[in-house]
Image (tube, rainbow, N blue to C red):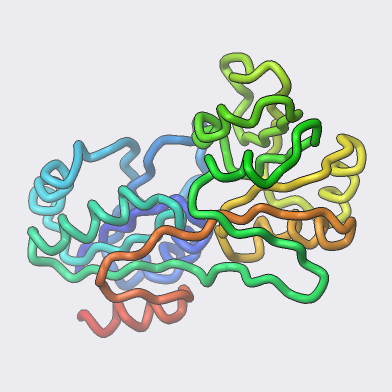
Length: 243
């Protein structure tokens, strides 16, 4: 039975693991960013590998045959390290990454490559919902004179890093109605999000369209030159082709 390391962290990773566990010996890896992650139903390791060399050592020591990168679309460093390590270890490698969102009629999106650009777009005095996670807050230091709201899964262990803002605790998914009610109750005027894709967090964009709110959307980082699939079923088929 082939031994597969799944770099997890996405809903697709959980679906993939459930789909292949009976045919492959699966190990999942989580970065450890969430203090109480959902169970994956397989052997799971938590924490970093110590760079490319550490990941290469792990792949060899754990006798991994195939590496599947099913991390978040913005886990660019891990994706890059995975590609390098798989090549150095001489094992098969595939990236499972869902398709990104595209604007439709009624959407008002502005695209950026870096969050530091947002301050040039959103006027001062606005209330801004940062649907980008706690780890990105350092990128918004130039967003002075705006009220910032950042949603996090785990209760914060420290104060909000800027005077004019606060954390909002909640675990997705949220319905469109819930997002509409939240945006209205907080008088949100702008959204800032990453182009994560998928249906799990799409509701905030649907709510923004319903309310006529503008959205700043960060483009995805480029992927390495490796096989890429955008659906769990396609990844299962690719894996079966490696046996």
